[in-house]
Length: 438
Ligand SMILES: *[C@@H]1O[C@H](CO)[C@@H](O)[C@H](O)[C@H]1NC(C)=O
Ligand SMILES: *[C@@H]1O[C@H](CO)[C@@H](O)[C@H](O)[C@H]1NC(C)=O
Ligand SMILES: *[C@@H]1O[C@H](CO)[C@@H](O)[C@H](O)[C@H]1NC(C)=O
Ligand SMILES: *[C@@H]1O[C@H](CO)[C@@H](O)[C@H](O)[C@H]1NC(C)=O
Ligand SMILES: [Zn+2]
Image (cartoon, rainbow, N blue to C red):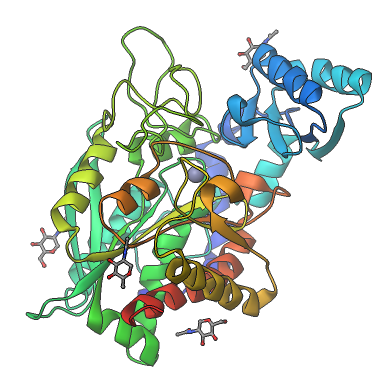
């Protein structure tokens, strides 16, 4: 199991040499994404009246801002925080407007390119070698993640089985790991997916971390052993493979899938608005150029359809659905699409409460928890609501770190603490569902 740990000294020694080579091979290729975010800003705004919210919506539309929080302009309302990424060509106009209208704001990032380059090591600065010595404290490209999965499938066949549930729009395999001790007896299962939204890189990092921890502690940790003996975990480290790849190669802040539209040049559908549950209602957009575009019809995206088919087929034994997003530090459960509590609310609520407490016990990081609609915002067509509606009793969406300081650019240094604390929450929820509620 030696490749699960990271030989630090080896990496340190290897790095300067590696850099030297890359400098020779790619002179001048020293800026991520060709410096396209130089001078861009991220600004937090809180409209305090309806008029201010209305004015903000208008200017957001005009300046075509990239909304980080919430997901769509329709969700901008008084009293709620909005984080916007403004292209450098529009930042002066936005700031002038804010000063004129006296709307409260705070600049979260003065220069997005600088934050981007500081927080994560340049992909070219890292060992891109095969799996032995796999480093779980850096972000990995899709290719690296898939190689890692193939490797585990070969070396850990006792606990891991890797299979594909279909193909993405661009033809990539949609891989899932089935994790757990094989058994002839009936076992219940937990579904975990990461990376529905491409730019939320901490999600896939957590999915990989979960698998690593499971393999490393299966023998030594009684809780983990119980989990893997009594349950199967279906883990999909990268749900939106096309989008994730695109966020590495072209646009770090890409969110949607990459499907084409027949009438518009904009590409992609929000894979978390494309499910057949109150599809394309409140909190989703019908416009293909919006980040929360619900798609031409439910399950139009091959990625969504593949997962929905898999869950439909296995829903009898899948007891929990967990989906990993960023950023907000929240643990959410249904409903997303309406302000109402689910039946048997108390079981789910107490699971969430305990999970959040367990998470907080590590570094004191606080998570809010509650129904997604009232805790985050209303959104329709989400995977969590769909899973719940289709009979999976425990369905949760995690919004991982942070609360906006780095936003989607959570530095690699924070992968370990984030995953360590989240691990406790996931174990806690899992143990909760192994018992009879309450
Ligand atoms: C500013 O940049 C954005 C994003 O690249 C672009 O869509 C927009 O047309 C530009 N606006 C102006 C006024 O140049
Ligand atoms: C995983 O390994 C098994 C054999 O142990 C093999 O049958 C299967 O095709 C592998 N999965 C993938 C996706 O390669
Ligand atoms: C609520 O929980 C009870 C006991 O676990 C179960 O029998 C019942 O079907 C649940 N009701 C709903 C609506 O989920
Ligand atoms: C779950 O978290 C609660 C609250 O922190 C704790 O009391 C309990 O022991 C945890 N259970 C497990 C199995 O980790
Ligand atoms: Zn998300």
